[in-house]
Image (cartoon, rainbow, N blue to C red):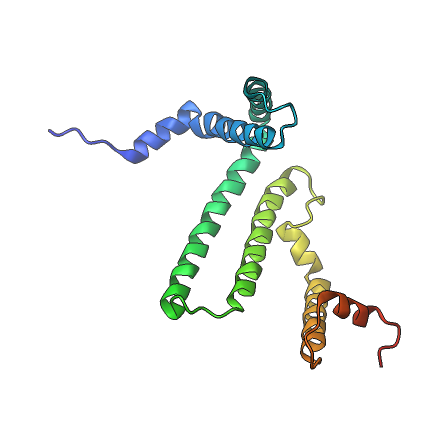
Length: 186
């Protein structure tokens, strides 16, 4: 009989040992805090002190299960978002190749912003379970406020399109703002 290695079983054992709940969040928080301290030089760019402070902050963070759960939700949903973005880039690469249109950058920014709001919504749904009525981007909040969010977005987008396309010359944001804030532009 041949011995087989089962990756699912190994991951279940790692989960039982706390690799995903303790070790990985610890390393992630430690690395991020250490990089921030080194980059900003808030404590004089002394590696030893930065490492000790980063370690203490990481230990305190992993003792709070709420922080660990938030990190897991954020990272799980970010990985889904990255997969969607890579698939979208592959499709766009097949369609346009290297001759992609200039407006694609704006579409990419919009998609990135939408994915960011989606991830915030997923985290807010988790937060909503513990503190009901306080999470601004939760699914409940979107459902309750969709009646006024959509018309405002449509009006803003329509206004930007009308102002930007109605001018014969190219307008910058200051001129658009001035046009929008005038008392009687007609």
